[in-house]
Amino acid sequence: MTEQLQTQVCEACRADAPKVSDAELAELIKQIPDWVPMARDGVMMLEREFKFKNFKLALEFTNKVAELAEAEFHHPSILTEWGKVTITWWTHAINGLHKNDFICAAKTDALLDN
Ligand SMILES: C[C@H](O)[C@H](O)[C@H]1CNC2=NC(N)=NC(=O)C2=N1
Image 1 (cartoon, rainbow, N blue to C red):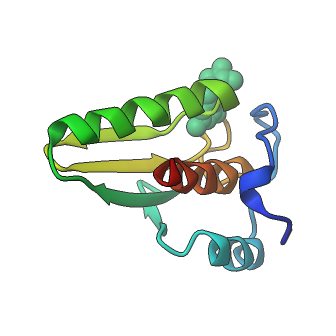
Image 2 (image 1 turned 60 degrees about the horizontal axis):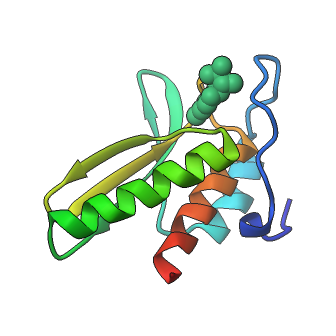
């Protein structure tokens, strides 16, 4: 579980896929420390706010996340505002967190590097 998340790819979302355990979450979150695990309506999610100087930069980042989502065929909630983008990852098929969500959160962070 400690292999670099950024280098991994998502697997197909299956309804019978296992949710990450509390122990796995505690381990995986170490690689994505800026993300906040949270429960909304009983569904575990990972959320992070990204700050930008204006709306144009926020939108450019939004589009990069959209391309990532399509490449991995795993899609987040994206809230795009002036100077801020809030990304929330969870797996709809299992109503909770799958390793895919951690991989995509790590890949989202990597979008800031380029
Ligand atoms: C049909 C189903 O929506 C697809 O297999 C994919 C699309 N993208 C997805 N994204 C996320 N976050 N969770 C899913 O379960 C999911 N399923």
